[in-house]
Image (cartoon, rainbow, N blue to C red; front, side, top):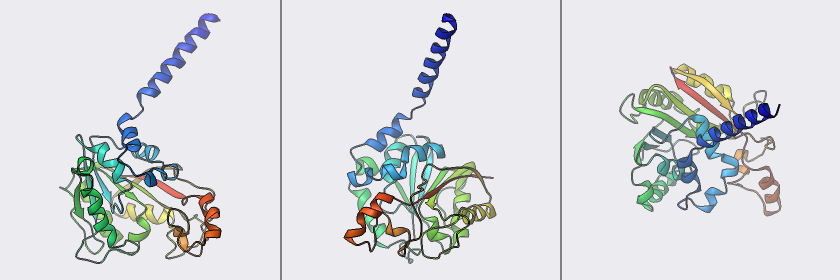
Length: 268
């Protein structure tokens, strides 16, 4: 019996060592780096960047498109993680056109300034333009490992979704992935246009029409506290707290950020 117990202990220790070896040190360093703002780091508890990027299978030697990077929350992580081995392509909207609904024009000029402020970290980021009015060319066809879209689908689903998805499909390698996170409306709830919440089926159906299969979904970014019934839509919740009076801030801060779907699609 003692020999058996000893053998089991050795096996358990070996398994633990194996799990430790699987830890993605470079990704952890990118997430914990001093280059990231404290305000953005405070969002990690809601956005779970390590778990999310691990679920999507993003490796440091991948070529990755970050769709509509906004203020650069995920760029802060992806740029140093991919630097030297992989490549980060930040796709913005066309600066000669109007931005899609919900995507403010100053986001692009702010993103430019964000990149320029720290060339040591962001100097290798390639910026391209993606629009809803036509199918954009984001990279050489068939050269991209992954496209990541964080909290944008509720904007482009109603305006040029086909062009967005076809551009992704063209850029990706066979078997390439799209990792998508967005504000989730419950399946049995009626759609409320302009609320920021969308049904998973809307995304899945749109992706399927253009050559993608849902490979996996995760509850990494779920939030059961989110009641999704706010007059101001999802932006009532942090970090926006739009139109929230001071007396209500504690209530919405206690809820946290929105309940989010986390979907991984594969190019057929």
